Length: 228
Image (cartoon, rainbow, N blue to C red; front, side, top):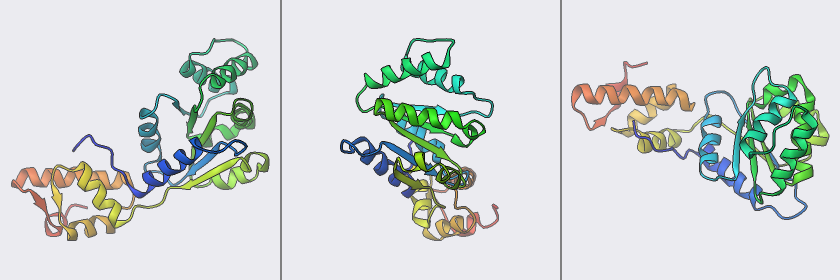
């Protein structure tokens, strides 16, 4: 399997939304919501995007996270002064964010933050006070949950929905990541069974194994037919 990053339609939609967010005009809210079912590549896309730009900070929320824990992780990424008090951490992070034009915070697994609404409000406050872009990534239901917080939902200038991958996406993944070619009928076969990135990667590994075992440069549907 190649180490490249596959640019699926979901990835392209995400990247386009982030570009619009970073290039927004003054007065336009700088928050975005990214949602979708597990396995569609949200986390992988966010990590890839953050790796392209030192001004993009990737944070992963955790089940037991507290407001101070969230701010401590952000402070560490920003190299802001530490503090034992949550509000002082907030002030330190806010100041650092103001010093970095174009900074963006990606918060993955944001569903975990809903056990304490103060954490959601803290992200909104950081955006409002510093002007930094804040992107929340979560599961399908996150859109409905956040729509109940109208004061926050109104700030989403971009809303991106990760969807099941198309046959074209499947071909893109194999073309960019697989060490062996897939025929068109093999692509159709894979797409019938796999519409999420994680599922497609399993087929990719299997296709490469069959190719190695049989010294093949191209895999056809009949070679993959018994691989489910």
